Structures are given as structure tokens and as C-alpha cells.
Amino acid sequence: MEKYIKKLKRRIALIRAWLIITVLFISNQQFNFIGTRLTPANHDVASFQLGLILGIEILAVATMMRYIKALKGTTSIESLYNQEHDERLQLIRQKSGMPMLMITSTLFLVAGVIAGYFNATVFLTLVIAGILQLSIGALIKLFYMKTY
Image 1 (spheres, rainbow, N blue to C red):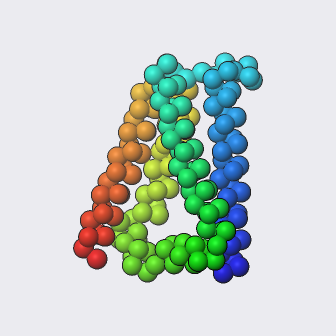
Image 2 (tube, rainbow, N blue to C red):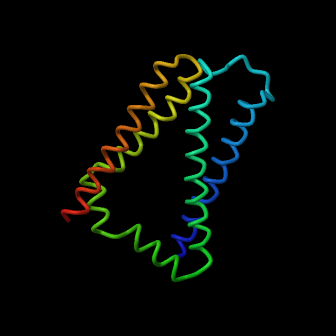
Image 3 (cartoon, helix red, strand yellow):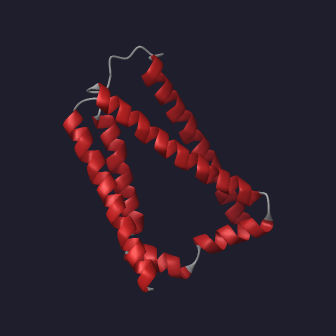
């Protein structure tokens, strides 16, 4: 269990680093602290980028709070550990291709945010592809949860 506690603390540290980086990024985009000429392709892209990054930040904060809450009690750590290592859920994740699907979808979204600085069409294409991939993966996962 000590390994799992260290793993949770490492996850919390990574989430905090991500939050700091994204807050700095959003602040620079909104207030232009560092005078860069790199601006999003148009205003709609900038607004969507901001919303996408804020949505990811909200999910990261919720996950971090769940980990911090779990670290406060041994029963909550054990239940989180059991939930993450449940063999049935692991089989469902493998059947739905979830580990690789999450990685590629995340890369699509990150590439879309970066591409938004250069071309709005590429931005929309990558973001829509990432969201569709995540949606299809979630539907497949729900299907397998009902059948297994």
C-alpha cells in the first residue's frame, strides 16, 4: 500500500505542475504578459481554446481533490486502490481499447490547441476528431460494462 500512496502523491504533484503551467498559459493568452506575436487564428478559436483548457483544468482539480481525500483515510485509499485494480474493469478497458484511445485523443486535443495558433481549420479538425474518439470509446466502454 505504501507504493500506491507514493504513486498517488506523484500523481498529485504532476497535476499541480499541469495546473500551474496551464494557469500561466491562460494568463499570458488573456493579458499578454510575455509579448508574443503568436496569437490564435481568430477570436472563436481563442475562446474555444480557453474553454477547452479550463475544462481540462476542472477535471484535473476534481481528480486531485479525489486523490487528496483518499490520502486522508486508509479505507478510502483501499477503495480507490481496489477500484483501479478491479479485474473486471481492467478487462472492460482493454476490450474497449481505452488506454491507447485516451492517449491518442489527448494528443489530438493538445495538437489541436497548438494548431489553433496557425490554422483554424486544422484546429477544428483535430479537436473534433479527439472528441469523437473519446465519445466512441465511452460508448464502447458502456456497452462492455452492460454485457460483462
